[in-house]
Amino acid sequence: MQRSVYTEDHENFREMIRDFIAHEVVPHYDAWEAAGHAPREFYEKLGALGVFGIEVPEEYGGSGVGGFKYQAVIVEELMRAGVSFGGSGVHTGLVLPYLLEFADEEQKKRWLPDFVSGRMMTAIAMTEPGTGSDLAGIRTTATLSEDGTHYVLNGAKTFITGGVLADLMLVVCRTSPAPAEDRRRGLSILCVDTRSEGYAVGRKLEKIGLRSSDTAELSFTDVRVPVENLLGEEGNAFAYLAHNLVPERLGIAVSAVAAAAAAIDFTLAYTRDRKVFGQPVSGFQNTKFVLAECAAEVAAAQALSDRALDLIEQGDLSSADAAAAKLFCTETASRVIDKCLQLHGGYGYMLEYPIARLYTDNRVFRIYGGTSEVMKTVIAKSMGL
Image (cartoon, rainbow, N blue to C red; front, top):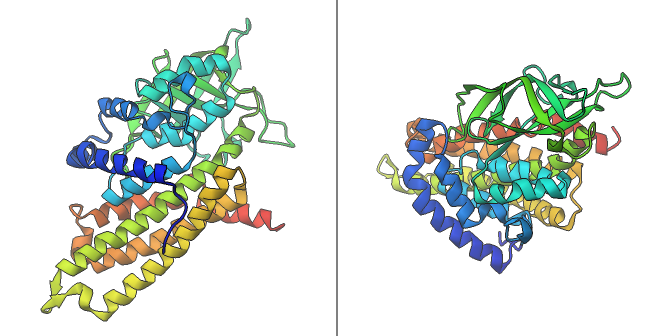
């Protein structure tokens, strides 16, 4: 189905990203997966390419062209090649919106130039052992010092993507007790220098997928954080998190659709080449029917995703819309990729085939950014249920 969501500028950008992936990522990707993260110098290459500064104003070192669609192009090209940019998706996809929206002028001047260049990598620490999607249940605390110059941070986080290599960590913590009538109040975001005394990276977690991105446990023991590193207003973090869940969930939806489309392409190539009983697997009616079903499902998910891309750039994508896009696109991708793996037979279970990587990488799409069950809850609330 013909798409109209991108301009000529987006397509020119796509060509540049596709060439970069082919030369700088694909030849090295197996080594990145074995190491559990991309090399640090790779992020500076992304910075030099301008990937981190697309939405950053020129006065802070970015290009200032803006627009979520450029990030969508990157995601589509990564999925097309069956690779990733390691943990840098959190750097631009999750952290940057917080800095652009809630950082004050001094903070922007202090952090954004190194952010754009890749000299400073960032991540965000929300999830804690035992909290999961219940962000109001966060127990990591930050107590303001008597002289009001710094906070003292204590607690632990888990499942933190980019947690091993990050230089600046946005930590969601409780700066005041939650009143009984509203558990969401009292949360704040502190930007923590990961070199701080008492800040510790625990285990680098072993995942079944997304193995080129570092995911870690973190702990904070009496970490001193200057008050100048408070992001936005104290106690308002929950509202900030809710605001930024919209682009985060759309980004996951876009990733899922791109992964499903890539799965079909990989499967078309495999079934045309693979012969069984004297003919290509693609010649069997079952193969044709399965791939036709997959193509139709992806077309529907693509239409929803593209509509959401237009809405977010217009400033009109609601929380319920984003939840619907994430729910539908991730569930669709799961079905499509599973069917495509089945058409690979035993080879689909082998990691040397890209369909196997897509299968394991895709599974988390229905979990992070809010589970499918949470998406249903958001949608139901918007219906008055």
